[in-house]
Length: 401
Image 1 (cartoon, rainbow, N blue to C red):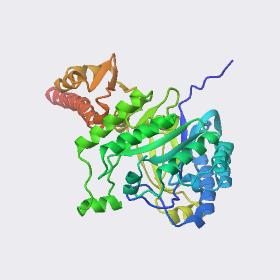
Image 2: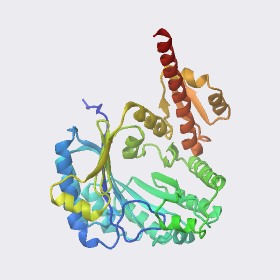
Image 3: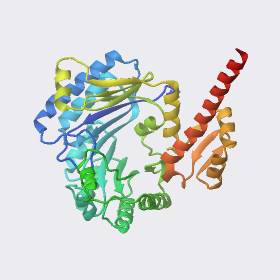
Image 4: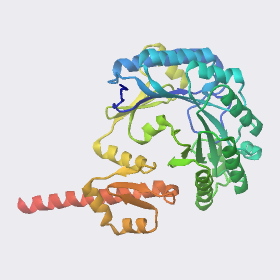
């Protein structure tokens, strides 16, 4: 008899901050020019895994492992092997678990990618970003389209049968035709998964400075939405199912790890700036590499802070994140009645931006580009009713008193 795993999913994220360069749009915790610290960092990660195991309530094996960054593929195969071995030894990895590594084009060879598979990785996410050399230069990327094609070939011949390609749209001063061509090039390769992200100008990045100084002009909201809709149309017509706002997959190839984030699963994060969520508490690690290493080598916690997620915040996040997925969210009967009686909600249904089947609320394909705004509106409708109910209770209490 086959045993069915009925426990809630539990994932691990491992952050590898080392990068050959910092891209001008990148707001992640990455470091450059510190290659000599890689070995110390791997040892620190292994130590943090053991430390976390002692303080966590989780005693079950991991359903997913995601090694991201940064550029994790810059680590030596032996270091990655030691890291995954520490994960398996400390927590255990469930049979059939999804184990992902991120890689950048331009550093690929068949032996290296085959080593990743041999170590135990069964999914790879390649940071292609664009199939247009001019767009890659605009993004400050060091690789070329030829490097992407080589990386993809090396991943497939190296043994990967679950490959994701990351793509960026809304790149300033790049024609929309280039985005269309990038999408078509990715589709032609036939990866199992494609992620598309609109360029966000993050505060503190070189792009943010250039925008502030008037040297770079971001695309308008209408231009951004048009490029996003183009992705939905082209990927959808090519057999990719949009299961989350930014993610498209062939049948059976959703990212299990990321699906856990969107559906409220608990997860552990280790490494620089990594976040964890368990037992209603969200915590996060230090962002400075030297501080992180010194803490771990002294046997101290790398945590920079934590917050208790109360029931109200948990529900808000469940609505916000759930509406980003193809499954949407389930509402209570009381919440359903509040929504169907709201005139604004009826407008959203009429305009085919959102629909409800029984008590399951979902965005339509036309609603996905407006997911953030629609999530805000739905929350406002539900919380307005809660406020009115609470006010009514206080008023009645005052009359009775």
